[in-house]
Length: 160
Image 1: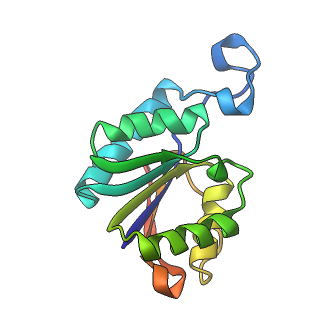
Image 2: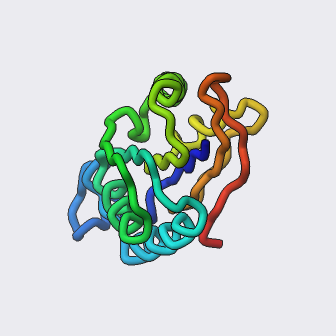
């Protein structure tokens, strides 16, 4: 099973979004962030013919990132989860996801989330790696073994 853990595309700073101060969950992608997400979607389409499960943070920038990716990749099930926001509990989420995937097998899974959640999640799934820094629209690739309750780091795709 393949797990793709994606950070959202570049978002405007809280003080630069439409010239007004915005709450973190309302921040939108910049034009560059939309392009990053599109490019990431094109790359993902080459590596995951169809996503069985997509889980997206409810924050605007993550939802916008998924919307761009969705133009390039078909998905069977798409869910929004408040558990994968920047301050989410990566260890608890990983355990729940692995348990779920034991009874609901999937071949390709995508998460669209935020720093620092994405780095903690990948490091928890494969404890042999240090928590990686994710560039905007970066996608970590892991092989998952739900029955063993662990993952194996395969690499990072980034725009650079």
